[in-house]
Image 1: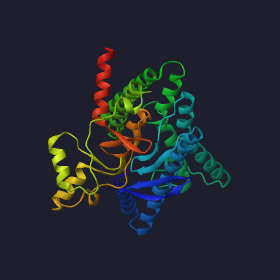
Image 2: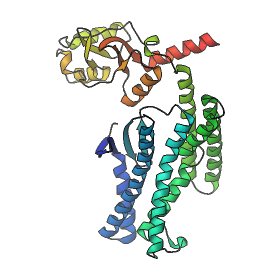
Image 3: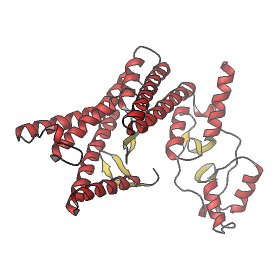
Image 4: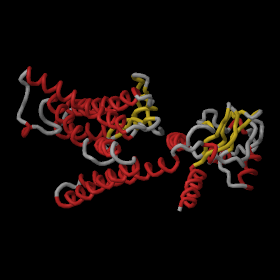
Length: 358
């Protein structure tokens, strides 16, 4: 993911921190410093927020490791100011699998909160909750409270929270998956309206949460509709077969020519039928802006690229297009280039199929 820094690799999964997370850390440090008027106060604040997000990362590993049990790999875990995201390569195909994957994250927070409760009880370290805030009170007790909050918040039955996926999984054991998603999304948007109404009169933060939930529910419903529309269809049925390629020794002038005579934006770089790289439109424009019009394609192309096999499903191609943040996927068969897949032609295929069914 762009603008992300790699923290490390644990249990075979890369963990990244988005650069905007540093803004949150800086803001928390400032709040604690302003309250305590000392560097030590700022250090305590930063330590607290890092401990909270450690719990968030463990939450995401709960999802990732449970998904692994069902053969689903996790691309990475990304730490954002609003929480963490475990990017699974695919969604669970069975309702019960999705149920356990969704519950695994909050379960981790329950275990953390329970362990801290036992420790605080044994050491008699509890203080009255009414005297505690996010910036004051025993450190471990505040971490326990945050984990309880994470469980409660994530179990709200609305996308994109875990509770929305739990609700869909339960409904999907009785009704068709896309219908279950639509019902869960509608319930989530109803909750968003309720949060928004309350936020108007009491807490403006609820307005942000309402917007977050509304958008998440709409996106999940749209994704479910797309999964239903393209499920079980191989890439070869929708891929572009009329396209142009470049050779690594071609000049960028050739890429300009092909761009101007057609609508193709990205060009596979091929030698003897095998793809060696991809020259994207942004790569081309960047080189032209630098005055490198007459250099070879090899000097401007991307050597690392994502492909999809022609016999893989459209759902897989869609997921890769989203995750790689690229416009075009080369389609291969036995290592040789046989087509291209873009979001545009995927959308066209879906519109044609919808028209044929109407």
